[in-house]
Amino acid sequence: RLMKMDIESSEFDVLPSLAQKQLLCESVLNTITIEWHDFFPFLKSDQALNRARAIKEHVLSPRVCELGRSTAFEEVDDESFLDDGKPLPPVKTAVFELANGKIHRESIDFAATNKG
Image (tube, rainbow, N blue to C red; front, side, top):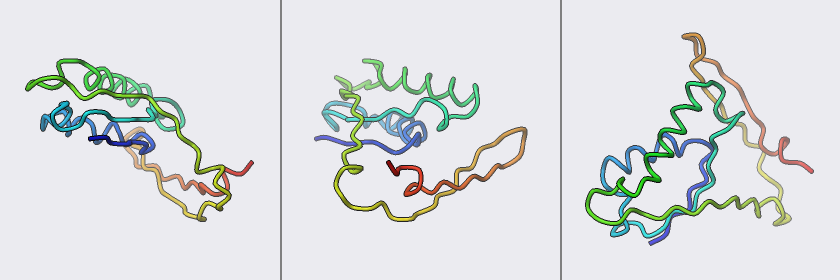
C-alpha cells in the first residue's frame, strides 16, 4: 500500500491525525512518497516552521507506530505535470494565516505563478 502526498504544507495538518490513529504503520501503509513544504512561502512564521519541524521529526520517528514497524517515507518532488503540455487551470486559492491575532488572506493564481 502506497500513498503519494504533495499537499502544499497541509501535510502538517494531516500527518498528526494519521499518527494519532496509528495509521502510519507498515501494516496499514507500506510507503508514503511525500514532498515536504517546510519552508517559506508555505510557512510564514518561525512558530509555523518550528511546529512543522516537530511534526516531521515525530512522524519520521521509528516509534510513531506503536503496533509494529512504521511506514517508510520517501521524499519525492514530482513536478512532471509542468511538462505534460496541458495548461494549468486558472484556479485561485486563498491562504489564511494567523498573524498578530488577525486573519490574513492571500490569493495565488497557480497558472500565472508556474509559467516558464
